[in-house]
Length: 213
Image (cartoon, rainbow, N blue to C red; front, side):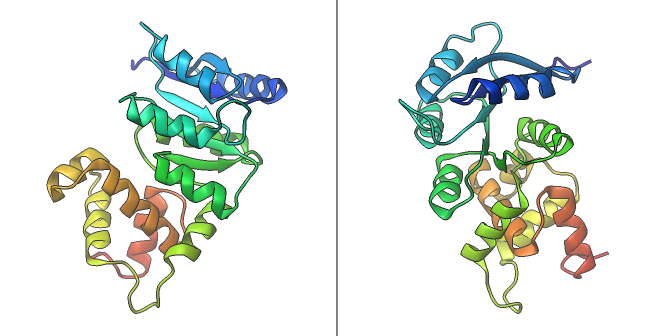
């Protein structure tokens, strides 16, 4: 049996942290290893994790001392391994795009249903990008193209590999590009197809005839 996914909760509101801990702690495959009230404290906790390294960070964005985007960038600069799943109340362009560009694996809003949140944490641990519907809409507005252009040739290549069950790492190796580039392509694919995850993207692609049956 695989070890539980170790989650760090980062939010400046104690009541939010308590609520998230309650949701996550009820799942046998998830383990809350700590909490932090801002980005700086989150960095310190990740660095001090030792024998219990953090797998997924649930990160708020607007916090005192150090906000979420700055913390995500610092984690990436330090070569830290945890995936970052943003969980916030803000879905404006000035919040969504910087967080994703900084390296967030997913972006959810705090009104996300419990089951969707749990599914997103597990997907983030696998390195899969997950977006709330509102955020997908924001990104779609950024990358929307005429119907005849639809997905680019590279995006279709990525989607075809995903349809075979390839992981981000396997797709990156096959196409000789980085995992980060694969994730960016996936985000664009999700936005263009108006979906939220890999399975939905593949299903939509088959329905639209973008992939051979």
